[in-house]
Each structure stands twice: as structure tokens, then as C-alpha cells.
Image (cartoon, rainbow, N blue to C red):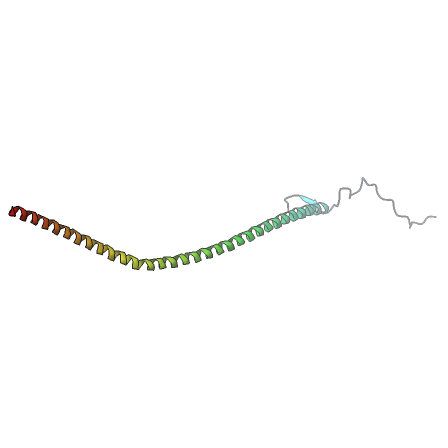
Length: 149
């Protein structure tokens, strides 16, 4: 007699039939309207989302690196512009000092030019007066000559 407790495992069910042939029967509401996904489908979707997010993060990191390079370049240009500005301010101060020196050095010469111009005008006036007196004297001589003749 055979015992009802056999040590052999039961034969496996055929692969094409059974309640798990289409995956897990557990359905979870994902919040996407009326779509219900199985746990495996959710896992696949989560993996796809993770890959997309990793790509997005990599893209953002690349953009951040580019922005950092641009920032460094701009900071360098700002520093260089500040050095140029300081140099130009120094030149401007030196030019202002030279202009003041020139004005101060010019003032005595301008005063001397004014004096000489005034003296020249007086000399010309005196010369003109002398010429007028000379002409007057010549006229008197001519008048006297005519009277004496």
C-alpha cells in the first residue's frame, strides 16, 4: 500500500497556463488617471524615470560646469578691467598734475606777454605821434619856406 504522504514533489504546472503567466496579479494605483500598473511595470517605469533623471542631472552638471568656466572667465576679465581702470586713473591724475604745472608755468609768461603787448602798443602810439609831429614840422618848414621866398 502506498502512503498518502509521498516524498516526490508535485509536477510543475504547464508554462502556458496559470494565473501568473501575465506577471503579478497585484495592481497598484499610480495616480495616473485610471491606469493601473503591475509592480513589475512600475519598476520598469521607475528605472526608465531614473535613467532620464540621471541624464538630466548629467546635463545640468555639464551646464553648471560650463557656467562655472564662463564665470571664471568673466571674473578674470573684471579683474583685468579693474587693473586697466586703476592704470587709467593713475594716468588721469598724472595728466591733471602736468596740466596744473603747465598752467602755473604758463601764467608768468602770459603776464609777460601782456606787458610786452602793452609796451608795444605804447611804442607804436609814440611812433605814430612822432611821425605826426615830424609831418607837422615838415609842413611848418614848407610853410616857412614859402613865406620866405
